[in-house]
Length: 334
Figure 1 (cartoon, rainbow, N blue to C red):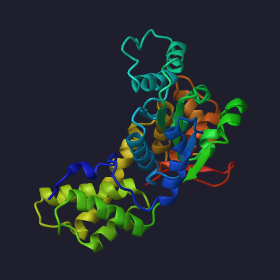
Figure 2: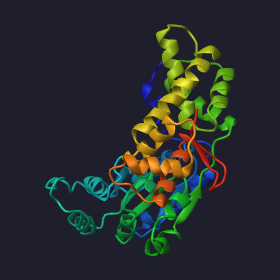
Figure 3: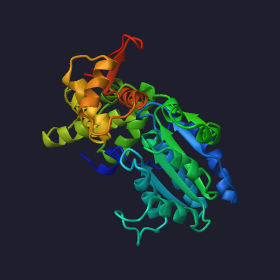
């Protein structure tokens, strides 16, 4: 039933993409100066989860590497590598300069200087979930490296630019912004159609069931692919000859739960603490939440930073916030 399991994974980068022509063309034009050995401005890809931001960024960098043979590249998930040290280490690792770096003793400034002094081979870095960086001044430092090009990915540009200082703002607020909207159901049907054609035996799933998956996904391609993957495995293990509507309906909440848990597992300690406090309460006000957070956090952050954390939890559909600032209520999303 499954002919290529790779295409059913969310991190799979296809050789062709659909329904993002405008975004592909825009980002391609931003990166084009690299082909002429010129500096290019940073690009910010922003929009909701599952809208194709990471896929398009990686897709275009792979295309660029076919044109520019001498090109360095590194992908950094700032949710996992959110400290200044970890991010710099990953960037140095992308150019093979970490052999003598000691994680416990090598100073952060040494890592940055080594990155600055590396050869002038063009270096494209994708900083995914960039608003998760603890020290956003690092973006200013990276911006000042002439041969390094940043592709920044974030759900919410306000969440990225709101907390940063004027010096960084003046450099990065003029970066090329590319907004990604959620997919329409018909677009998800064709995206799923590609995955089915590349990775599943012919005749296993009909059009009505693909449409059902798209309808259950809320415009999120990650969820759509997750439902397809779980439904295919369920049918294979049953075993039955085809993926039915009943299997899809059964696996939809499981696929959403799987993505939600993966997201929770990647939260920073402070974000996870806030999420747990909200989960423990049926509903909670901002002040009650902040008080509980301060009592339990080892190093409580400011109210402003906590608001940024909560905004991130909202964007990832982990919590809901109802009402205005004074009468706001936080709840865990069902």
